Amino acid sequence: MGWIEAVKRIATDPSVKVICPVCQKVYLKVRDIPNENNPSEVQRQMLCDKCGAFNALRLTK
Ligand SMILES: [Zn+2]
Image (cartoon, rainbow, N blue to C red; front, side, top):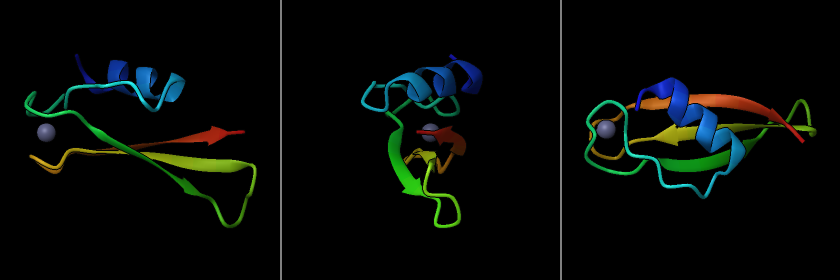
C-alpha cells in the first residue's frame, strides 16, 4: 500500500491500522492538530516511529 491509499483510509477513519508505506514495518501514528487560524479545520498527521515517514492532510469538520 502506498501513501495515497494510506491517506485515503486514514482520512475516512483515524483509528484504522495502516502499515507504514515506506518501511512496511509498523503502523502509522495518527493525530489531529487543530488549526488555530481556522477552527473548522484540522490537520491530520500521520507519522512512522520507525523510519520517520510523515504525511498530513487537511480535514474540514
Ligand atoms: Zn516507516
